[in-house]
Image (cartoon, rainbow, N blue to C red; front, side):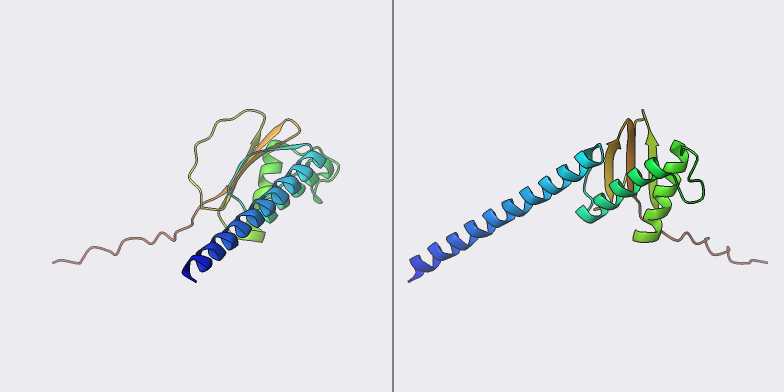
Length: 145
């Protein structure tokens, strides 16, 4: 009886592993399809899939159509970074940072699950979030006479 139970547990674990691998394959295929359709290359991420998709689609939209405030002007790298940062601040909370350009180096600390490095066309995009802590001034020193 104990042996049968162990064999059944092994089978369940194996099925779960196969299903997990299948889910990962689907995720990889979905992201590959999105990247191809947007002429993007995914370089590094620990960000959830839906947020990666949002970043890719929003960035492509900004590059292609500009922003509603300046739709006719070709956006600068600074404009793109500002708009992507503002979008992520409004959707996913404050303290997002964005660097966009054709050549840059970086070494950053970020909140877990909030880092995405990708490129679209010839532009590289680094998008990440940091923790925000309220800085309070120290109490005044005790008053002495």
